[in-house]
Image 1 (cartoon, rainbow, N blue to C red):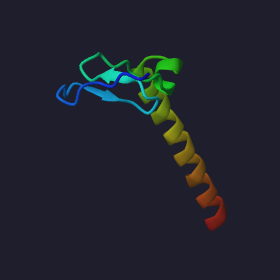
Image 2 (image 1 turned 30 degrees about the vertical axis):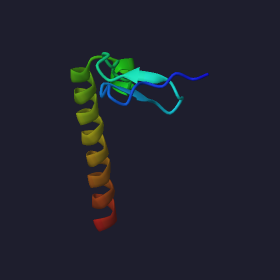
Image 3 (image 1 turned 45 degrees about the vertical axis):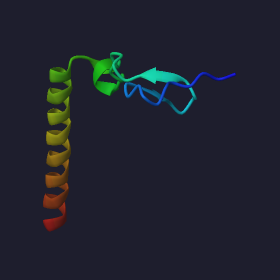
Image 4 (image 1 turned 60 degrees about the horizontal axis):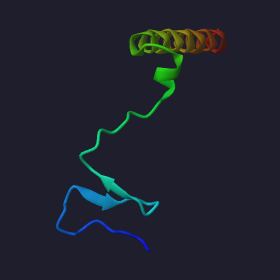
Length: 67
């Protein structure tokens, strides 16, 4: 038999798996690519470098086409 949280308790609800979850529990942050690869600051720097490289490549292609 399943136990369901009381309707009068607003801090609990059923998740999609049918388990009772307490809203007040600390949620763990999801692991994303920034946590796997390194510090967020390093990620931002790497992203900027990649954007600059792509922009330079586009500019070079435009120069070749216009010449």
